[in-house]
Image (cartoon, rainbow, N blue to C red; front, side, top):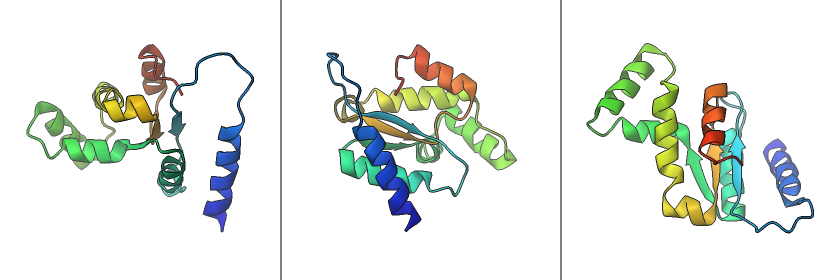
Length: 130
């Protein structure tokens, strides 16, 4: 099955580590790709295998919309209009999630982030590069 084959290929690549004396840190990974490509499926499989946190940005934003706040209003309006949610709002939401203790200790797989160059630069500035 194609999903299992892709999972095995990604898993084999992750296990390859260059020789280094640097201290090991928890796994950090970004999975990107178009809708329907199996990105979330792979993220779930990998997070289960490695014991890290699956951070689904779409679910984070969906959860944000259930809370009464200005950010929730912006997300709801953007989604209703079919427009992208502003990068600064997504960046802050992701940063808040990645700074929680479970992500700090177990590592994380970002599902659907970064999507823009600005988001990628944000990860780099926040020193959260995979």
